[in-house]
Image (cartoon, rainbow, N blue to C red; front, side, top):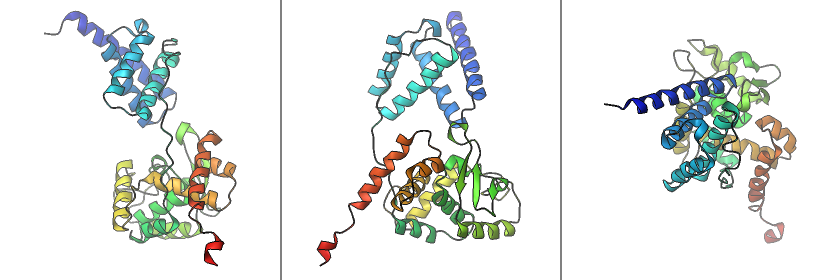
Amino acid sequence: MIPEEKLKKEEMFERYLKEFKQELIISGYSSKTLEMYYMYAKEMLFFINKKPEEINERDIIGYLAGKKEKGCSNATIALVHAALKYFFKEYLKLPTIENVKSAKKAKSLPKVLTKSEVKSLFEATRFGRNRLMLQFMYGSGSRVSEVVKIKIEDINFKEKTAMIRGGKGNKDRLIILSKEWIKGTTKYLDKKKIKSEYVFSKKNGKPLSTDTIQRIVKDAAQKAGITKHVTPHSLRHSYATHLLEAGVNIRYIQSLLGHSSLNTTQIYTNVANEQLKKVESPLDKL
């Protein structure tokens, strides 16, 4: 039988967590971020097992250190820190976590496909929804979470542009679209038996899941014989890098990607430099 005191504490935690979740919903966080923040706040409360107002810096440090010892990466620890920061600072209005440092994320260069690899990825996929979806991700630099939500009404077929509604940070932004993609998508949508408000949908007209898209990309890479680890985000990275290599102003790329800070976009300059190193000197060809 559960002791009455423990039961009361668990009920108290659940009440805090319910209110915390409501705060996240009102703030407009994506369902994925909401889920992660809620999960880590819950884990922290039950691990420390104190009233939130009584939790101190040492408790938080002990919880984070425990996760690190269990093998969590710095990126995960940084995410947990962000969740707890919102819980204490924004929700409870407490300075509990102000002096607790976040783990530094390892700075690794994004994995980029060559233009020939991108082309082979498309060629390995039959014309229709899946190929158009791969082309959309590479041709617009959209995130997988944005791909599942893109609607026909968001596309301006005449101007070859589209609006990403409620992207990361709940921001809208304009993206550019390929002339060939517009032509292929118009043909595809006209032939669809079951109409849907979504550009990329299941046979019943409902939107695809991000997991389904990730699997489609993985399968296409295997069929194309690409040995690199390819994900939907690889196409976004490739889009940004290839634009930069083509001489497009980095400020434009920042806007097209929907980055709040130019520093986030700057990483692609390093990737582009890696590609430049592969160019042979004309001296070697004399």
